[in-house]
Length: 470
Image (cartoon, rainbow, N blue to C red; front, side):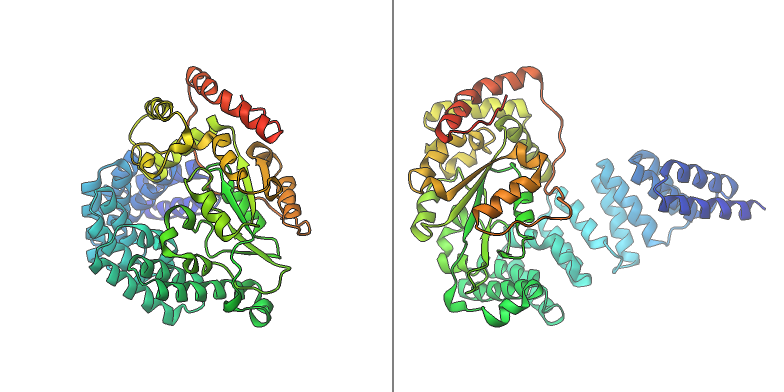
């Protein structure tokens, strides 16, 4: 009778999980365990639900019990390893994940999780092998690890392994643009620029073919690549990702191969042909293309862009520099793990550097070796003056981030009008690249307000528009 009752509790808990009723499910799993305490699966499922609830220590206890009761199940070790890693116990987490893999080498997600733990331990070489194995087992994992392969520092052996791994995917996934894009990135790292260009061009074609097949058959001409008609140049953490995603859903806008090509700031030495390979070579002028690399404060960029595209349209979206600085810091600290200082310490340090510079536009690439530009990136007027000394004012569209967040449809309509395109409404304006972070003290906000106030005032006077930032 106890076993029958336990099974009833267990199946009821499973149904509650489908409805996201975690607390009720946890209670029923406990009842199942009370009725049948030696059933490993009950402890395992309770542990999974506790982990979803964020109760890591309790989850670990449940998973340990599951492993104790039935030691030959890979999934039990896998979940225990995940919970331990979330607790910060990386060494023991790694042991359990490795045990899971020994029992079942092709366990879904095992190589991904092993790689992530190894990465946290600073063992990138071992993590790299795990990521390649994850891609070989499940090619869909390429979406997750494309950037790691493309932008991490790889030795020649690793680079060769990555290139061969991605090349093998082409035979089975020949219609997926990301495969060609990733291969282009890897060949670029290997200084095979011509080969990279060829793969980028294929990726652009596959991408356009999925959405505009008629253009690919009638208006595709590699000999007439025009490059971007517009650039969203910033600012960083001001909504550029969401804005680009929205406008690229317009049927007459063909996106670049990726949102941020980063050519003008970091990849300029690759040559203009490398850059042009990221854009669809469409001869039908009813269509436009562009990218969104926040490069408004990058030195030399304004001159470089004007040299190649003097008629290009430039879109600038600006956010209260205080809020932007905090968002920037949180992104660097949490998403990229490049920052160990407190926000207060980082701000104080950068204030000293900027004041020593005198003219913020004199900051160059060496600036980012000591600071991340939390404040510099919000001194908008200093850099807009550089751009507007070269490009005519009518080639700029200036938007306020706060207006964009409040009513994105109105602001995207302004972009379409600026690009001479008919209006286009989205069914839903999803927010992209969101960050979560705590606020700042009132005293620090006052300090930052005083720091930015003269720059904000000059910006309003220079552009003849109000931003109303406090």
